[in-house]
Length: 154
Image 1 (cartoon, rainbow, N blue to C red):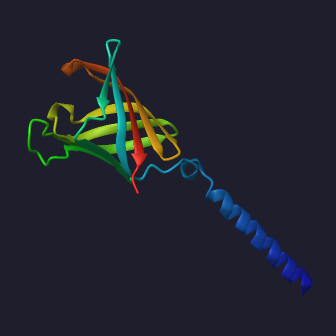
Image 2: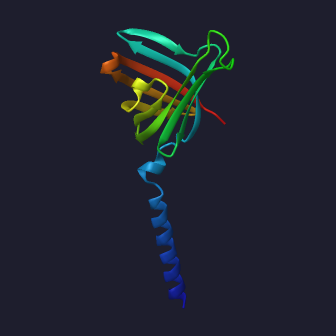
Image 3: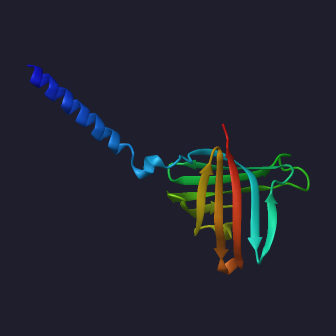
């Protein structure tokens, strides 16, 4: 009887240790980017010149990740009134493998940017998300490096 109990305990221990190993895959080891992130800083480097493109007084921008989809929204805080009225939006699918992040932009208010793929590096550090890489669209004469920093929204 004792040997049956010991065998049963040994079997349970092996099953538990096997199931623990299944949950430590590369996918679960990566930090989750799911949720809403607020843009706090953005720079564009084109032809050797660096331009700070964010923050902009009176504007807010967020980026959201859910499943394998992303979206971004930017607007002015004066509800479209005045000279600083702005509304930008876009979204599509993404893939993240380690730090290699790719976006397929399916929807965008700048329609000529739609149906394009962009490849970036994406890192998390504490509550910050750092996206960097090249945006290149030959037909629009766009070839620029971006560096965007987001903070996780509660």
